[in-house]
Length: 193
Image 1: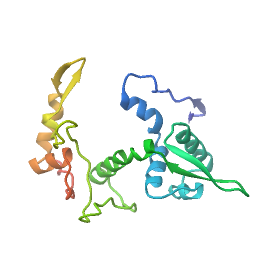
Image 2: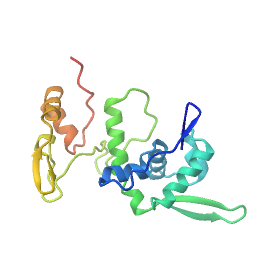
Image 3: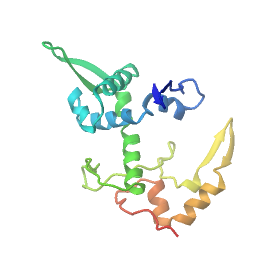
Image 4: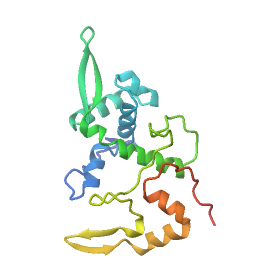
């Protein structure tokens, strides 16, 4: 529940919408939720571990409970006296890793400020990892202009304004870097015009 100008406002549920993005946001769309998942991916498992982001205890307890109820975290007793629990990602939770990585990649590129979070590196070569779009059938990287939308078996191109904006504001290398998997993604956003 949010409070706006002294009035309690209940958040509308997106769970019943016919859209997997909306249903996903219903589970992890509140900003603290993905930060808890991020920290769990980096090894946090105790209540105090998750408090390092500055989240209030009551909000943290509510978010952990919601993530457990959603099957994203498991709550396991690790100490009997006093009772203490740890929170460990389930398979459903660990499958949010690419989402967290994509948000980190986008935030590195498009937001300003210090970055005091761990970098995500490829263990084999030591370079930063990046997230892109792959074809599920041929396992090939796909650039945004190659993507069409399909609804009820009818395919149509993405909005031309989206494609035009990507083409106008990106060099071919940047366009490829923002839409396919690379291991050397270090470019800054294009300068404004």
